[in-house]
Amino acid sequence: MPPLVKICGLSTPETVDAAIRHGATHIGLVHYEPSPRHVDLATAAALRKRAEGKVKVALLLVNASQQLTGQALATVRPDIIQFHGSETPEWLARVRQLVPAEVWKAVGLKDAGTLDRVARYQGAADRILFDAPAQALPGGTGTRFDWSLLRGHRHAIDWGIAGGLTPDNIGQAIAETGAPLVDVSSGVESAPGIKDMDKMAAFLKAVASC
Image 1 (spheres, rainbow, N blue to C red):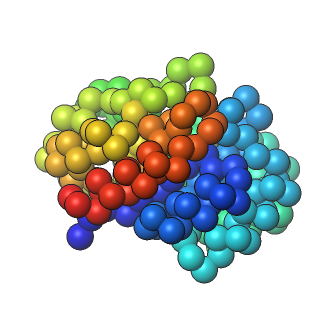
Image 2 (cartoon, rainbow, N blue to C red; image 1 turned 180 degrees about the horizontal axis):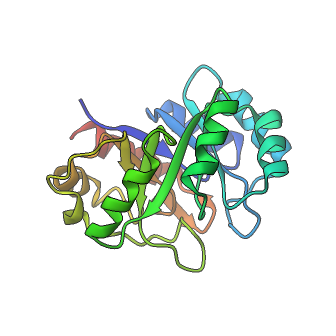
């Protein structure tokens, strides 16, 4: 079976429809103002409603306050809440106990030591999303990590990969890592925050052929 596919950073009804039409299993909505993919909570709620029952919807937050996290969950009602900052396992565990959504944690994969530290999230996160180490922004930078770090690793938590994935390299990424889920954002854009329908279709087609 090919991996699950999440198209992240969607911001318009047209791109949500295209992701669904071409076979995505998940979509991601970013609520983080510095990001070029930021959507306000009302827009996120409308896009989530449009996708309801067709794909799983993740809402991405970065170091959000308790108040904002609660407001975002109540307004958008996502299937998944994805934390993409320096959130602790203790915070994730608390959220996981209180809300019906899955809890995902993005982790910048720098070296083998990162894999050891990820074990702290066991029981706190439903899935770990391995990404490139954070730069000016915590994700969506088009930078990939060293896929060989995951070769042969025994994962204690469900996981996936992100960071620098494109229609051209996704086959290699899957072959090297065996990832059960892949997450793409900038790799299917014509400009930061602007999704390209043809690239989205090409990415999903490439994954389906794996």
